[in-house]
Amino acid sequence: MLKWLLTVLVVLVILAVATPWLGRFAPGRLPGDFRIPVCGRLLYVPLASTIVLALLVWAIGKLV
Image (cartoon, rainbow, N blue to C red; front, side, top):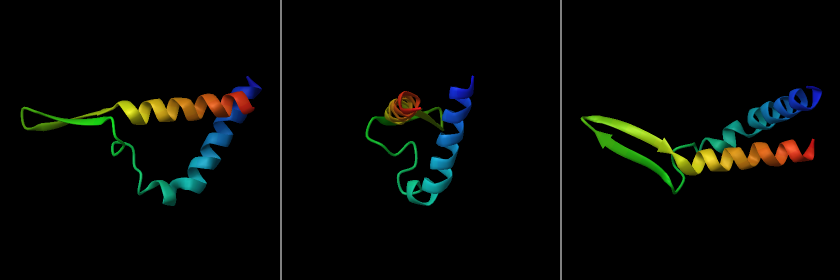
């Protein structure tokens, strides 16, 4: 339980520090993130962003 708490804390600190820099690379703008117009609405499918975030969380979990 403590390992997960530390992982969440580290991720939150990293995101808080990197937020200004990540503004240019917002989720939904990576190659592999799809925007599909459906009936006048825009449907976002952030496939690449999901994979990148999952790998980042996995790597942080392995380090802790």
